[in-house]
Image (cartoon, rainbow, N blue to C red):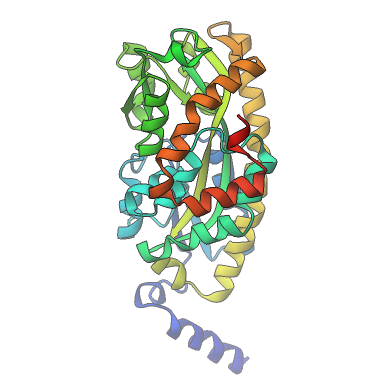
Amino acid sequence: MKRRSAMAAAAVALLPVGLRAQAQQPIVLKFSHVVAADTPKGKGALRFKELAEKNTGGKVRVEVYPNSQLYKDGEELQMLQLGSVQMLAPSVSKFGPLGAREFELFDLPYLFDNYDELHKVTQGPIGQSLLKKLESKGILGLAFWDNGFKEMSSNKPLRTPADFRGQKLRIQSSKVLDSQMRALGATPQVMAFSEVYQALQTGVVDGTENPPSNLYTQKMHEVQKYLTLSDHGVIEYAVVVNKKFWDGLPPDIRAGLDSAMKEATKYADDIARQENEDALAKVRASGKTQIITLTADEKKAWKKALLKVHRDHEAQIGKDVIREIYKETGFDPDKL
């Protein structure tokens, strides 16, 4: 008994000062995100909370803040680096402005045709090497979470690249997404996710791109007349933590959280597919948005128009990593 007490005391002594003072109290982990609680990411965060608290025997208390309750998507990464929040799951395009330009490869249009191709990258060596690039920024990458394949919405039907001319379309802050819209002939408008519904409602922008789950839960379908099932890109999240906070945790706590993250990741990926299918069905049933399905030839025209975005951003993203992904997925740009 004495030996056990001594070992516990020694473990406490090894903790950083801030955590040592709280050693007998639950460690609070604030998990902030910018989408609704009933989206795949929102549900994944709640699943992680449940598993993390269970796996650590209550030694960790996870506080989940959805819908930009704490920070908007343009400021949350800075707050993570400052330690104001411990965990985020931002879109990977957010890492480009931090200097990790390789993450912008996920913004390249038509880089992946399906989830199997996507997971060859996110769950393989390429994905792990990408996450390691964040460590120099004080950020530790734990996992990639799917949100789903993006569809184009607008107040006019978008079937061909020519249909995009004159359209103002909302994007996240990303040079690749900027190029994507311009390659189609549209004018990109960078805007925080929380502001998109009102911008669509008031006509500040004509349309946007989203997986169906985001479109439906944010009620964007109520202010968009058309939705084109383009599957032209993905929104992928990276679950990240403040590195200093994570490194300061006792090994047993980290192990419990790692296990929770693995299980939550599978849950989040599985539910993303189902939620997007369900959301699309609800959008269709609402009768407020007309669904457009591209023919094979129409989709090929989109791919041809957008291939230049890959070439235009080889220098900043890295030609080698793009070619690695082509090899992984079997994509041959010369056959378009």
